[in-house]
Amino acid sequence: MERAFQVDLRGVVDLLSHHLYTSPQVYLRELLQNAADAITARRQAEPDAPAVVTIDPPEATGDGTLRVRDSGIGLTEREVHELLATIGRSSKRDELGLARHEFLGQFGIGLLSCFLVADEVHVLTRSARGGPTVEWTGLSDGRYRVAPAARERPEPGTTVTLRPRPGTEQWLSGAMAGDLAVRYADALPVEISIAGRRVNSGTLPWRLGHPSPAARAAALREYAERVFGFAPFDVIDLAVPEAGLTGLAFVLPMAANPAARSGHRVYLRRMLLSDSVDTLLPEWAFFLRCVVDTAELRPTAGREALYEDDLLADTREALGAQVRDWLVRLAATAPDRLQRFLSVHHLGVKALALHDAEMLRVVDRWWPMETAAGPMTLAEFRRRHPVVRYTATADEFRELAAVAAAQNLGLVNGGYAYDIEIMRRLPLLDPAISVRRLEPAELTTCFEPPDPDLETRLRPFLRLAADTLHALGCAVVPRSFDPPTLPALYMLSREAAQAQEMRSARSAANDLWAGVLGAVDSTAATDRPQLILNLRNPVVRRVAEAPDPSLAALGVQALYGQALLSGHHPLRPQDSALLNHSFLGLLDWAMAAGGTR
Image (tube, rainbow, N blue to C red; front, side):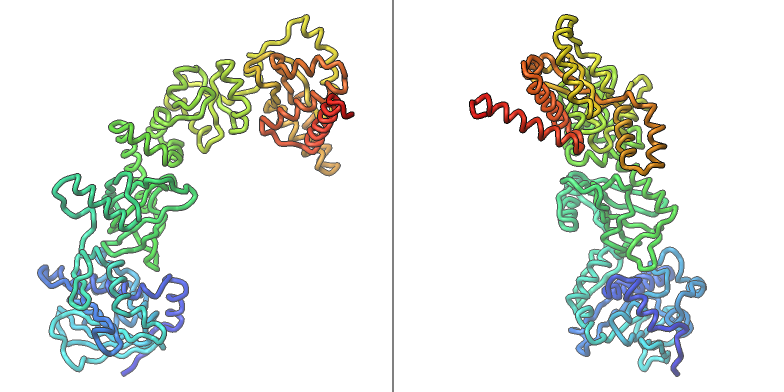
């Protein structure tokens, strides 16, 4: 007697094949999962019951079908109706004792995945609780039939037979079935065999016994090379009892892209969930690849990712804490190895230091920052300088580093990722630590103004220089400072930068907003960038002493342009025009001096 499924099976199969599962290969995972659950259920009543799953590919059956046989608990006729022909009714699984957390399957749709590769699924099952062997046949058009089997199965258990749909034969071949069995079920604590040969190890790498710690380390390195393709820098044991999680974290020996989420191998009660779970660890731990087994974390419906809930969030935090503890131990016991690690993975550690005081201490003590006096740790820098001053960008640092070093002013390059945030967190380690961004005024206070006689002699030149740069909104200030090889500095205070941005915005705005911005800008009208001319530089002195005012003006324009370029400041159209004009003008003077004018 044929009966109809309670759902449109064609629609369900389409949903599975196009939206829930990423590949038809999951059919074998679901069959092995059902078999493992059945064996677990039988062993709860019969601890010594066999735990064997046999896969007979088409090459063995000889009729083009694939069979999966297990020694599990089997099903009665009532259970066949409840479990194989009703989709999504978890209450029935509860009544039958097949929905507890010891079992892998939770969604009651595993058998339907077989319709991804077959139009007909045949199940022959005999219950260990008693009763005759039952035969169930499901068709992809939504019909099924249940009948007593023509012959009794000799032992309790279940056999599932699949006849491939045309075009899907490759998924059921012996080679593919063997590869899929090893991929998904290698760690299952049951024997899985194909053609009389066991194909799974039945264990996880961190649970194997070894004669010594060195032998274990060598075995785990070999495992990482086989699975991930690299020999790890180190191996970290992981355990989160609340999630029933154990496993390993392998530290990458090479730099990783922080923007790329790491894919981790996750087993769910020793059945592979996925090789590419990217939500297991905190984002900063991009330098790790993990292999873990969990009993309590929930999979998504497609069983290819972890369900995002509070338990997963707590597990992620606990795993991050264990990685952090490993780093602290490394700093305390093997500082040379820590240095090697930081040289490759400093970005991850610095990201962690933004919210972890222990990691902040590690970075403060061990990670060399770029300073005006060369690379040094922040702890060493503070021993030399009472105030941690930093630049906001690498360009600003390159412009000011030599000047700051010549004035014995400590300066740190804050242009690298996380460095400014880390420096600002230093007072958490010691409230007496002073950290602030370098203001140009701090630097210029170290410069020497010209003596009265020199200032008097320079007065005509300074007027000419001020007139030359007036239209550009830049003041000219003469000073003497080291190094003498630097002719000029373009100094822009934060107030001057804000005023400059405001004026640029006002020039691009309509009349209404220009008026509003003009009212705001009026409070900063006196804030202007400064061109600091170094009177110790011979080129500046020659420009100041030039007998021809037009040549002196060209020299001022060239010094202005050179200061902008050396400081990597953005060039406005008027700046580019002035730079071009000074270059051509000085070239003309040079040609004239050579007698070609």
